[in-house]
Image 1 (cartoon, rainbow, N blue to C red):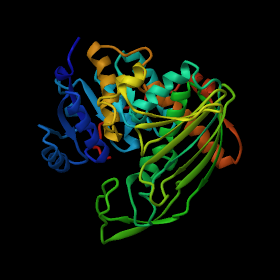
Image 2: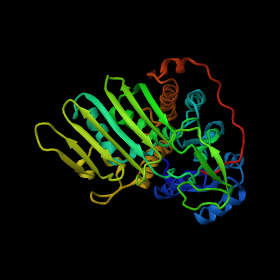
Image 3: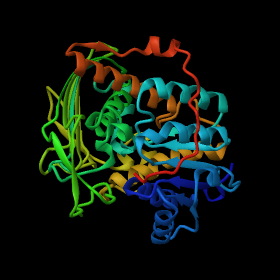
Length: 405
């Protein structure tokens, strides 16, 4: 089997999340051949700052580089489909940031193209790879919680609280019609379907936009940056600041989730609780090494992440001994180890722990149902059967410059 050191990777996007990809790839021993920025000048500046050997001038240059085996797409959402399609067409494996596309109609063609290619394809739902999330998925599948009945939680951030906060994700043409749900809510929805083993089949959603007008800086803005341009332009907002969603799962379980990007003091708080007929479990991403286990007739428990006390999946995702906290950045390393094991083997895993394009497309189907429900004010079923029967064309693959994430 090929070692990770023999695999060459390139990263499209040099912003916050692109940098996380570069650093995680290095940690697992993958050779990062270069990065592609929004402009040649920005790419060169970021390549130097990251000590990356090369700044590519275009996507074409990446695709023509025989030393690149895998391409990571961390560009704005509207570029995911054309870029991922071009990468697959060039015979290279691809890791794409979420959401996979702006709509399920777009992502459907990518799923077919990926399946026909025989190449490894993955969507970066990295939160699956907190070790305790991997662990509890195994325990739920083994029946430890009994029948899953009720799934609740939230995903709260505050980085778009003020009207001076700005990012490309606020622009529907770049980020998509869903903002809070598409950006962070999709993580929670994917995670709960993954952990419980139960697809979401129906939703009832309500949206609200509280910051109705924002001041867009005239200069570039980094994600999560606190620096502000002195000159701004007022923009009306058409995407949601918050969402509340009722859920029905395939086995009949019920659920609810609240999503917000305007919750003061919440920097990156993803919480979930899963109640079963025998026991319950709860977890918070801001204290990721602790898993609460609830019982009716005996004392509750808190499991401190410890490879010696977790199942095989949890141990595989863990890189440090118990008591040494593993956080957000570590999930990328665990995710990439799983993906690159398949790259090294030369073929996709038929049942991977990471999200494939097919899983990313399924989340897009859920998102489409959420958007329809919020618009119509009614329960909406996730249209899996109708979506799978559509004959969407494989997306085109234009070669265009890449704004950084």
